[in-house]
Length: 140
Image (cartoon, rainbow, N blue to C red; front, side, top):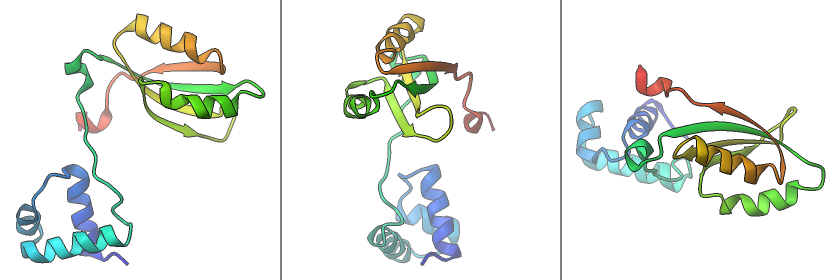
């Protein structure tokens, strides 16, 4: 399906999905048209599913980022899964195995916003909050 050149293209796009075909081609010694064809094929095969935007939320006034592990109360999982999309603070959420049911990454303004968010989550389960101190990838 994907060869070494495809993997290099994917790696470059993961770092910066706005690289042009020409920029990628220069880096991996391939013509822009060949890069375009390979990316189109990777998209057609479903290997590349989408492109995303990474936002610096701190510059928008949302300086707190947390992980929350949520142990859902009996009978509340269905309701939580239906309503989680209404929580604008949730950047990512996953159903997980183990003692918790849900793993959330949330973006918040401050401690008061966190408190209000946790108060809303308590309707569905017992949360454990972990404050994110830094993004290791950004600090490498």
